[in-house]
Amino acid sequence: MSEHEYQSISTIGIRRVLILAATALIAACGGPADKKMVTNGTQEQYRASIDAIDAELNAHERAAFNWAVSGMDLEKLNKTYPNASVRQVVRGHIRQLKEGNPDEIGKLREQIKEQLPTAAELQKIRAVDPAFRLEDSFFGKKPIITARIVNGSALPLSEASWNAALYINGDAQPVATSKVRSDFRSIEGLKPNHQVTARFTVGFVKGDRSWTTLAIRQATSTRLELEMISDTALDFSDKAYLSTDHQKRIDFLESQLKQALEFEDI
Image (tube, rainbow, N blue to C red; front, side, top):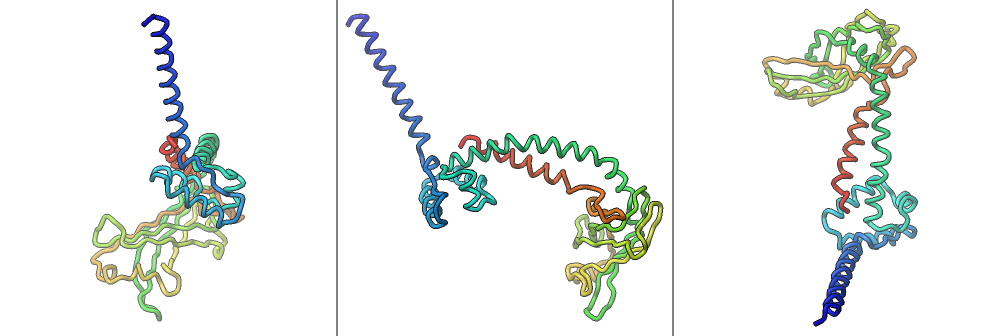
């Protein structure tokens, strides 16, 4: 065999390898995740198309698609990803999150910084000497909370809500939790450096039954904690001192990005 013939055979071999590799790549990208859905028709047509595709998806692809379309109806899906494939929807959603979430997270962190002085001031509004007792009423035992609400801040308060937690017998975990509300309008508001004795009925008129269990009734000791929910504090114009809980939104956006990383291989 001549050198020229050897080189020709080698070249043919290389080409075959490349063709086989390209064919394998095309096959890999042409699976059920690449089949087009029908999104511009009826609900039944969409359902039939996605059911046929779903039957061939692996668990990872199925989870990725369900995540990407969570909260979408057919109209929104067609507007955003018309007649797209599962892979296109997943990749589109990932791209959208990676482009938008970091910017929103940055803006929210700046807003949190701006609110820090106000948040610190609200921490000076405290419930002092909170106490719990059960009172007899027409409807049976009624859970009652009392406390002195001390406004040690420079902020006038018209309303605020509190997270209440009841502990019994020295336990580390609460046996009952609830949210109670202070309305200071009837006393012309809670002004800075003022205090008032507050009384709360947990569960309104009939009382919350989770606060009147036999375990609570027969407890040898009780301890109550009241913590103000800062973003419920309103000024004298009934406007919230703090905006919506930005950290909760940041946590959600970051969890989306984390989920996106898990599905980047789709």
